[in-house]
Image: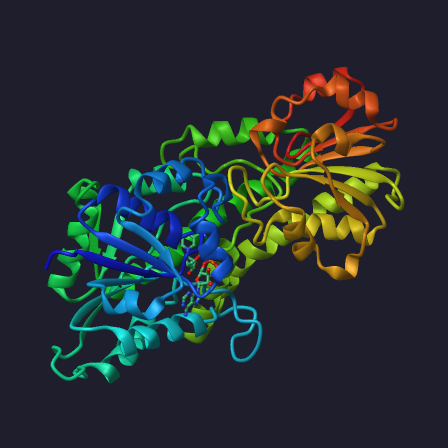
Length: 460
Ligand SMILES: NC(=O)c1ccc[n+]([C@@H]2O[C@H](COP(=O)([O-])OP(=O)(O)OC[C@H]3O[C@@H](n4cnc5c(N)ncnc54)[C@H](O)[C@@H]3O)[C@@H](O)[C@H]2O)c1
């Protein structure tokens, strides 16, 4: 079966960029991305490509090429499902906040709602593709919902039939477009060979065939959780060593380089920092912890839980360390915070380390001047919450942030912060002034030469 029409439910950080690249690489397929959120769809349709709701380098060009040609964004969910040969489920799956499994299990209400919508609106044969990250055996639930509708057909039309595939997304925010255009691998899990080949045929239009991996459904679902758990584990591992470096006089960048040169370990993802953020790592590991607990594997659950615990510890450690170096109190002191997004090249702040660190400092009474090239004031306000009041303001430039500040705290590795003019910053700060570089990206020698005292993560 060759696919001519695709519908994607969910126009978020995954659905938007993924479908834009499919439309770009498959001009013969009509792709419609639908979402219930009218404001988000309006932003995807904004004639000004700098207003797209997701910031990703290169995304604007891809959307500019395809939108209106074979890429469409709409809130009309039902007709888009009805017209589709293949429906991707790319809705959010956050950690449950209440009920059984609260704080660990994924909340599957949006997956269930979208599966029910597909069951109600699909026509003829439809391949349903799980693109969201899901707990192992979720495909069974999706299949059960679809099976209940199977065989129904509007009078005169052919009866409904479904096949379910798992096709987790491995893109990283900030590099989503190159990740989608040249993926290390595409994973397709399923037990219906015709459906698997139909989806492989879509990716095959730009991905080399040896990079398209076929597995059973459960391996595919588990591989995505495992990939995120292993990546997050590397971050927690290097951050644990960073703390030991600071205590012993070692330098975590030297240690990371030395161990990364070992081909069995590899050099990637060994940068010490303020801990991992983003919507996925914590949620997916907690989900793994929940699954392990469910199957009675309590030691395995505790092993992965420690990766999450260490991440929170690192964030509190950095906030505490700032307070200690500023003579044990930050009450009424101005601190310039550079970077709020969870990493560079994205406007996403979900689970950003900056949130916890800023909250800790606000609770200590600090006045924060926050700069980020892509994160809006409204987003920062939503993340910091109302309880912490007006102890912070968003400013337009790093120099404005530094004015009258006792310390400058770098929390996101935006390229703009690599080349800061330390003399200009030192000139407007209150003395003695500090640089706290939680990303190891600033030129520490220049900052010292300009008169600042410097702490860089992992440098003893
Ligand atoms: N963000 C990432 O880097 C990343 C990477 C790989 C996988 N994932 C996974 O992909 C999934 C989506 O993540 P995201 O970051 O794109 O989330 P997101 O919150 O940015 O987007 C999800 C969208 O789905 C929409 N939606 C929810 N229910 C709907 C319904 N019934 N009908 C229509 N629209 C509906 C929401 O309005 C929202 O706009 C998650 O499972 C996530 O774990 C995310």
